[in-house]
Amino acid sequence: MKTNKVILALLLILALASFFRIYGLGTESLWLDEAHSVRVSGQNFVSVIRGAAVGKHTPLYFIGLHFWIGFLGDSEVSLRALSAIFGILSVLIIYWVGCALFNRKVGLISSLLSAISLFHIHYSQEARPYSLLLLLSLLSFLFFIKILKQDKKWHYPCYLLCNILLCYTHVFGLFTFAAQIFFLLLFWSKYQSQRFKLLAVLGATIAALLPLILFMGSEGISMAQHGSWIQEPSLTSIWSTIRAFCGSRGLLVLFFFCLAVIAPFSIRKVEGTWILKKPVESLRSISWNIKPEAVEEFILLAIWLFLPIVLLFVVSKIITPLYVTRYLIGASPALYLLVARGLSELNIRKVIYPILIIIVIVSSSGLVNYYTKINKEQWREVAELVQVNSTKNDALFFCANYVQNPFDYYYRGELAKFGIDRNVEDAQEIAAFVNDAITGKKRLWLILSHTGRNPPIPVESYLIDRYGNDSLLLEQEFVGVRVLVFAVK
Image: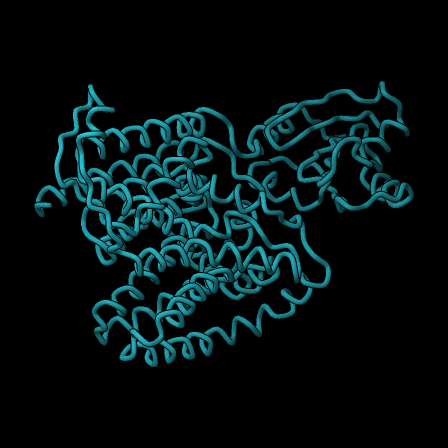
């Protein structure tokens, strides 16, 4: 492909990626986890690091967001713009990975798939670490591939830095690193000049992670002993992850699977002509030469894609449930690279372009739903409802207590706020919390979100039993939040 055409195509893809990641950036409210990011990052530097550890997160993203807020403020657009920038850069980096592993055509196709990926777009519009996790996973593999293929000295410090930053962004960045080590061990005899230097990088990475291990060790032990909100995964969890990588569209899963399967083969037309109006006759007339050509690259991408998924699944089964699809975002580029490689081998423009158009159209249907429907919890609307309809004789009661964070981001009133743990079920304990909240008050606002159970909610049931059905003055449903107002006098 000519350089000028490649540059133009890449710029258009980056423009498309930028549009999808910036459009509607501040339309929806911050949800619970984003509010946690704001609360942690808005503190002083030392508290940011400590707060990240308490939340069982590595600190790099929150440190970056801390300084970002200092320069640009903490509006929804500002908070999410940092992730959007990481997402846009990821589209560029996956192009470079595709070029390093295969060629420019694969680089362009994979960057286009990433640009329109609903999975990538979603996490590029959240004030959370996952977009940075994606970017650093790509950079880590970029330098790993360059070491395998070129073995230049300056690649090693860059690779080391990427891996350290990756693991300080999210603990599951270790799975990306593990995939690379597994591939190296698999091809140990081939990369004799690189293998010991790569092992030295491994040792240096582990040494650099010791402060993180010591700092977060107690939190990890606590999670292993007591568990968390995450449910134990099943085999359908892996299927759900692959579907999410494909944009949650069944047709895309089929297309991606077929294209990924042919990725390790070279497909060349020997004779015959493809006529779009006569597909059956065309298939009969064409002779193909099919042979393995990119087997090692295919194995690398397969390990990159599946090893983190399998490792996280096994850890979740043996130690404690940790399997969440968004934690595996660093593995998703491997799928797009496999698909891009398979599509690039269909060396007939009349085949490649229709398939690309179908992928874009099907992806667009998912994007239309994403941009036209409310996906995040409506805390802005909840705060406005309370602001407009509350009186000084009201109190706010949160169940679960930690959902107060996103409410506080929007609420500017002065009502007293109380909370209760979502797991409290004992009636006497509930009564003690409620009595504390209603002292001197006439109405109680009950705000329910992330309760972790189906109705009836114990606090709601308790209030109805105590004050009667007629005490319920208001009930309103929002996305992810339910608000009830009770008369308590």
